[in-house]
Image (cartoon, rainbow over all chains, first blue to last red; front, side, top):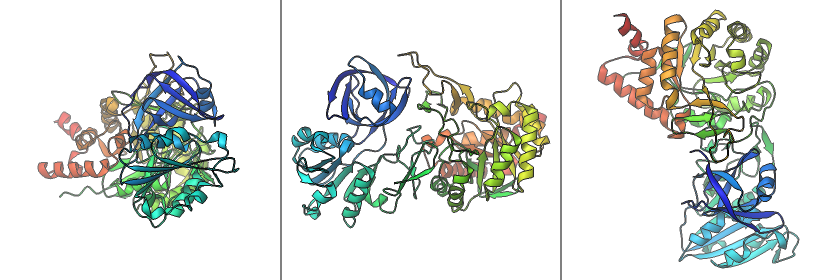
Length: 252
Length: 302
């Protein structure tokens, strides 16, 4: 598909570094699916849908900076939705969202009707906690901050240790890579009960070029993912290395 | 079921359906996965002498008639690809290293540096890289020199991938043959461009790129047909093949083997599917693989 023209209808400053951009295009997407967002003249990047018509962006590079500086009425090109999203299953689930990782998880919480949802949100500091209010609408929320400015003082993995994890039917995880690796290790043994949304460098975004494949199974994050079962990731490159635009391995 | 096994440029393949360069070939594990999904051989992403990030995104867009891409030869350099090649070889099928350079010495240096490939495919045909690819591949003198330098650098077979973006592809094919090529691969993508009508911006980060997929198959068939008439070395057909019927057509035009690129978009298990279809066709018609290669020429000559 050629990029659709999406006109920005609303911009929400979620935290000092994170911005939500909503547009006039509503997509029929599964929670966890992504779109390719083209900032014309700058770059095109994959972004998880945080709303059926919106994305939530943390400033990290040229394209995210350009996106964060856009105004209502400006337009972007979008393609998608692409990739495999989250499978909603079970009666009691835990959502574990680190930093901007809450973006693909919010639509999941919204869609998990008649399911008991516990959400753990982590950030460096209280001002950077994302979607605390929105997640609260769908269930119980606990927060962790690295600096202890709100909630549990420490990482999400530490907060998880306060819970009896066996009672949850499914865990949904997205956040910084080392956090996800930590969570994966904790959930080891709870087979078939976790789903992780991964982040890798994308080029084509449609499963052809091979820039985003992960070792050792050669799975394409853009098409076979971005959501993978934890069991698939246990022996994978997650938490060890990723590849840059040239395809070179970059150790974490 | 009739055998699909063949020998091409000294390589023994279980079937003639090969993964094309630039598609799911960035890592060893990806190439191994393609081997597991039934490819007869795999060709790596094109590898150069220095790490290269490639063009800015968007690098690929699906159009109604095919795919437009301008990846820009992203690669980690041959030094950082050695491990990936070793992993790819665990797939148990021939692994062909695609290499690109600006001049004969650079091709030779990469081939000598990237040990262990079962064959080397010279990319003198990428339509959108400054100083590389089709820039050198449209000059028959340079193609001949590059091929000769590559042949000197290795005992492994050397395939030369040709660009269709020339007045007469046969001239370039003949230059490759004269330089000692063991086979030619035809065709690389056809130069193309798309413009976003909402904004006027060219869609690809590189402004223009190469068209692949269904739309270019008739062009590829014609190029293969013409090359078969002119050359003594085998031709590997590539361009828009998406099912077994397309593969049969390409072989009848003169291809000894066929490469698959964009069609992995629809189905990553396309290799198995094409092989099953091809096998069934040969059985129904009581043909061998050999019988269909170049059949269109024998019909014309009758």
